View 1 (spheres, rainbow, N blue to C red):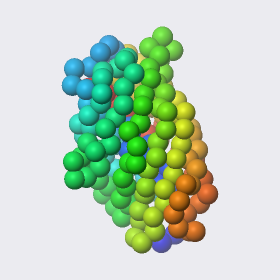
View 2 (view 1 turned 60 degrees about the vertical axis):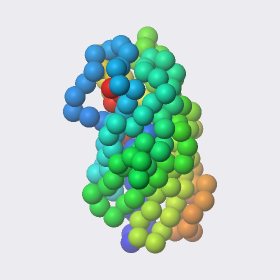
View 3 (view 1 turned 135 degrees about the vertical axis):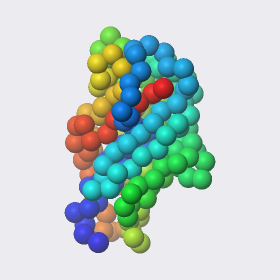
View 4 (view 1 turned 30 degrees about the horizontal axis):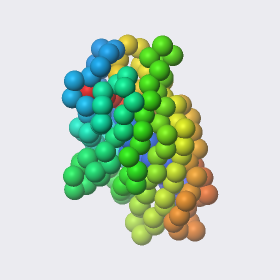
Length: 166
């Protein structure tokens, strides 16, 4: 395993609560109280669908990690990385500014026998036009536990993650 693959763990942290999808919903409340996700992490694509939210945007809401993580959810990656979300992230929305904020992302990423846990706080997302798709601004996740092979922090670049509420 190359250590250079681990910057993807922070991006995977974003994936655990965010997602992108090819369709878009018109601005306004969504109907299903769900969020889908997709992200590319160190060459691996990680996705999930239909995670449950506690409300519809623009109301403040939280995402239920048990509906993202397996076995209750379907978070999966097409490569050697696996992940699980350790918290239920809370989102707030500012429709006038076209942004959303997440209180915290706490995720554990695994590759082979290496496990790394990271946490990022106060993440800002930009809305895509008049849809309920949001794209991340750059953020840094700090290691909270894990192997000595895990970097102390990792940065997720702007646009590396997105979320679509439906």
